[in-house]
Length: 440
Ligand code: FCB
Image 1 (cartoon, rainbow, N blue to C red):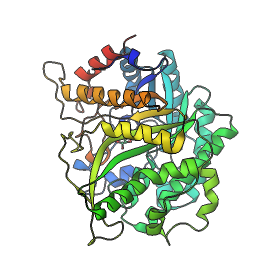
Image 2: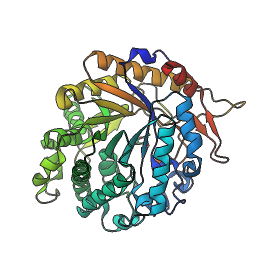
Image 3: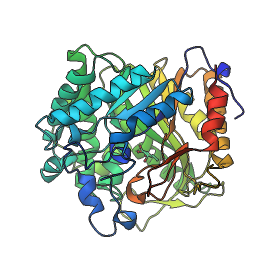
């Protein structure tokens, strides 16, 4: 790596991230069915119809996984608490599930790891999906109740809490593009989910504050958008894409407004009286999580329906996901977010990483591509700090190779390789490189 811990401000947090459904093994511990289970069970949605039933069996192997974090010299662990594990029907607490997170958090603290919790990383209980999921306003109150229950159990020991992971994926990818559960392609459901997921954020934040919780934030994902040619139509298309993907959520959370060019497409499908929710949605936060992976080049497509957009293949090197590698985009968002939205509020890079077709050879995984990727994005972060962004930490996605949603177990993001036959963990060369870079 071309950076070291001392290049970053004192107290900068280095961590790695995972999410419950992607690693735990959802068949254990009395967890309820989620919309991901049924989405995956429907032909054509997920590679080989794979699901998170076993995943990395982190439910049983968490001590080994936390040892890996500690042995790497990482300071913090970003994990999520599955709603369907804590409340299998979305409403009734499951003592076994609560006890699991209780043990997990204690095990982090025993190892000196700071627990960074995410409340919702996509495990919507099927019973709530049956009632319309995020298109239904009631889901927001139920999410508030879940927030209360899990916070009463572990809130005394977590270092930071994020309400929602990637509202864009929860709402747009899942209800408009149909690539994630519940797999809808419906403008009305999208408009509602785009609003309700932010209302869920506001509702959870209010519940957390009522319990005196500090260090509360949200994790948003950002995608660098560039016009694919120099026509005014392409510029307008890039602006609209940026508004849907990048501005909708941050504007709501920090200013209490939605971009008007997106509202133009969503009207008349927005839930009645949505304006009255904006104060709750934009209440103050303590930090903002930034997930960043890639960029997209877009064009105006007059033949398709609103938002009349199409993506064009880029010319940069890509990862196993086919995502272009563009570290400058991370610098762009960190500086832009500070300048235009959050000022001095602490920023954390809560996800950044790459998938590669890694294989174990003679007991080791050689992944120089990932080492360069991390190095280049850390240097972009360092430049953003020099340019005034208050970035306080960086979490690599992901600790482990895991269930990559619609791509099943095919895409490997981990700094630790997982053999999905034996579940054996093998730290990759990038793990060792990161460890050396952040050694004290
Ligand atoms: C993000 C998700 C995370 C993982 C990475 C690759 O969108 O938050 O769960 O799938 O992408």
